[in-house]
Length: 176
Image (cartoon, rainbow, N blue to C red):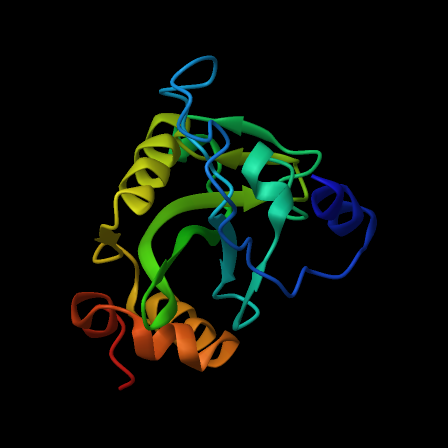
């Protein structure tokens, strides 16, 4: 939790993924059982307008740098000049080979900072977070450029995690 607050104090994007921690319930079966843990998930903002992708932990609570001071609507037509952004929910797990990208699911956002309005569907974001936690790869709806930026980011951020990831995940991000 301390890292979350420290990362939000900085103006520059975070350079780390949330790494897996121990089971919060320690197997006791009491309070907290059935709660979803987001400790091993990190949001990656993909900005195809600026040709970059970066971790912004503020997105976990809809407070990423691009989301701040924006009122979100559920009708794309109300944000005709919105710029495209993606939040890729990336889940990291650990196997006997080491850490790997377990699931990735991207959610679309359109944001017009000039009028401080944006478009996103919260249920879609929640569903994509759930799919990422379950090890699914949901990126086929992304435009090619954005998907390439995300794939390049995942490859370069941690080559070991990329190499340990499933073939399904790797095939979802072709290099060319």
